[in-house]
Length: 478
Image (cartoon, rainbow, N blue to C red; front, side, top):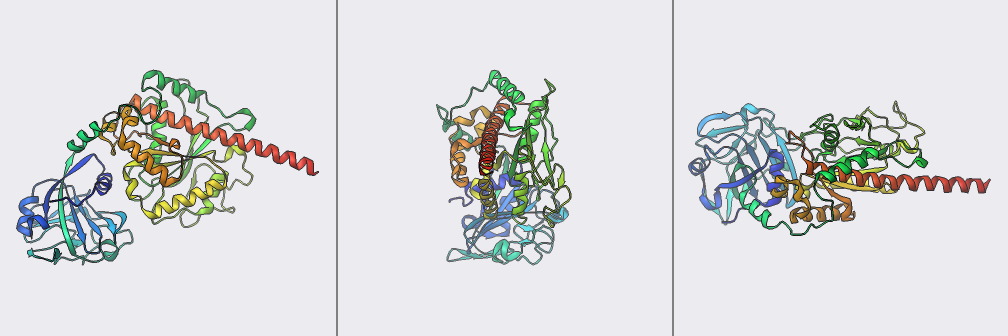
């Protein structure tokens, strides 16, 4: 019988779980029957599990426990647990609801099916439920929803339509590591020829790229001392991790200068213009990576604030305040910014493993930002991250990036979503789980940074020409 949980939703859950893993179906009520003895027989003692419900409103929701189910009539303590919504009324709309009281994340009880939270946040069923016309009217409830899990402003209606009328309920065991079957498929899908021309992955390429970036500088005619590259992206996509990766390469060790990780809200709360210093030469690169708040569904970045960032009005180390956006009256406002204060290229940092489930609100925010960026004629690129989750062969060796058909498909999709040429979508891999540097990861990162600097040069050159033309016109009018 077919497993209902599709690949894009599996990928979303893997991202939330936070480590490479795959799924093995343990229990399915349309196949095994809906009864508590059967649930416990098949699911107790199986380690981490995901419980997924599919209701008649075409919504998909459930819960994750990293600890085993049991039948001892006792709480399950689990700081890693979360509830989730993947789909709502037929539309993909993923939301994660982290546990707020780990001591009662779950309850193991031989009289109940999957049971999350005391009270309960989500009680699926008890006893035995028979189907009628392919539908199970589960007898659980959401009476205590929000008691042990943080709903972030949602409620039982927006979580699940407040409905336990389901066509199916599945419980999957979460097994560490990539799916071996998927790995075999990935191996067979590696292309003989790279789908994009790219330098060789070797020490010579890595050293050449590093030298080019150390020697890089904007044209002297611009009067600009360093190219400003603005990083924009959804929380958890790897925006701050990109700076840390660049910094690690030039420091010749793994560093973590910018706060990074997968959290409920953006870790970036201060606008930063990060400099990068080359350990070998002692030189500071003439490229600044500008980090701003991560995009969140429920916290829209003020449109005028984006203009101020692009125009160079916001000073380094400005503390963002969502309740009071930056204005011309804010302390520190730079009233007459020079070309060197402005943003010269924008890099959207996007998670390549969740392209199919990017929330609609996030897409709208990015499109609104693109509109403002286009008004300023500022070039844009995409840094496509976490592609090791898309292709196990890339996880094994980043040098497989341009031989992976899965990566090529991800690049094509995001190019269409963002309305950018495919050559402007740059696949990279940030340093996340690694403890030592990897030459192939370095090459992807350095090449992406070099191409971005080239685009920044194009923008600065155009601005100099524009100012010269305007000055010339002004002299004629006099």
